Length: 362
Image (tube, rainbow, N blue to C red; front, side, top):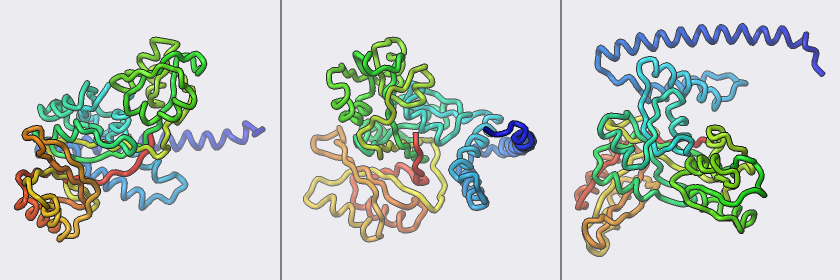
């Protein structure tokens, strides 16, 4: 057993360091407020994601350790988020309710000091941003196990919003209940995607239990809070917010289970050098049409990361294609390739150029 007397000087040193950190945080906040005043006078955007990324990159290069770079990023994300809130918090709409994985994606991207606006549908997220009631919106676009969220793709056809960023979140599902006892479960609630992602676990461990689909994993946790015989498949955040006990952690069938989210905004994102561009287009109904459409991208050696098709809903057997490619619209080869694509297309729309996401765990 350690001697309490030997720890006392070290703890005192930590207290002294904490006091210095607190003073420095407030010094930093005052400088941020001065910058905010200048931006207000110049009518400039107070939120500058490129500057934020530059801070992360600079600190990662300067960091000698042992404090890990991932932790440095997390700490400074909250410092930046809290500093911005002094001028007025960033308003972010997302598919709610609270404690969904979409909220986790919001916190991953914007920190805890945002004004979060949970809404009931993906369409409402778009509406909040289009009407200026939110600065940004966060919506799911695809899961590595269950595939694309088609409704999100369809909304881009008529929406004026741009894709401002993407978020990759490693999703872990937990089995939760009020009692924490698996043998007392009589029914389980969750979102259809979460149920599908935990199919093998449920079949192996709870084959006789009634499984009910609900609108979100957070709604499942809410129902489990109300019924001691009910369980929920949801996040660890949901367990904390709804005062549930984790029966079993990480019950997803695929441990490498990622969901990709898009950040939408009225404005586009500046070039960073590590970007992705998303477009949608429709083609003429003739033999070899898709091949001809993709030829300009091949000629300019554009790396495609995704291609997806959806019915146009305007004419039978007419499709709209969604393509993600590496590069920014300001890059010459992307611009030239899209000019060639436009000449072949019936309809072409650039959804946005934005920084590629970094993976993060839920």
